[in-house]
Length: 277
Image 1 (spheres, rainbow, N blue to C red):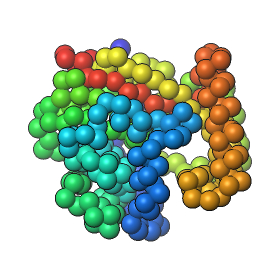
Image 2: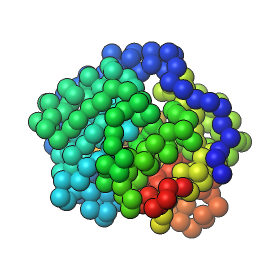
Image 3: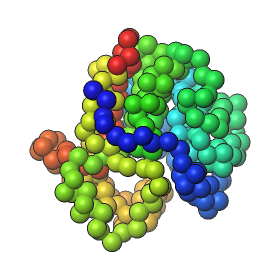
Image 4: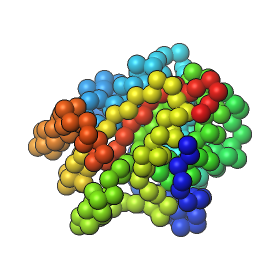
């Protein structure tokens, strides 16, 4: 069953938000420790992106020059990381400003030959059917109309190809109301929303043998750690605190699965059904 959600399109407000965000981003070459982090995936049990890369390793994404679609590639972080590990990546995003930054990043990383970047919407992109081994949606589906977009993504994914989804979720309206009142600034665009259980059920209906993992029971607390993305490069106090917090996070969802409705992020990995949906 398709989730009943309002029609969501890329609005002028959304494009303006992304253009403003792009103007405030500084793009340099990706540090080697970042590539090494996702090569080793030591923290795959604790962090959703590490879990994503570990799953991609297990599905053979980084052997044999697999073709990957990075939907909603933004400024190209994931595209460069995938390419560095051996993939041929096509990134697509509606923001021309962010795609410009992604091209700059790929060039600085020496990966322009492995990263192709497209400005546009998936509905208008000239992508052949069944042309990708993997489709990655990293924190982008919550910006779009999923019943309109996801079938198009599955069309370009090969039968038996792997889809990987990382998205924010809000299964508990009460908890969401509390989170909204916590006095920590949000970095949210005009069109985004957190996914609900109907959204997740719809995504999983397109996939066989799908696996899900839940993260970030304490998601709002992470914002108190300004160096959370640098746990591999010093910042020992931040690293210790984050690992302890995330270890508790994972232990709780393992021991008490009913708590998953209070978690803030989900990772879904699955293969496309032969008939699609």
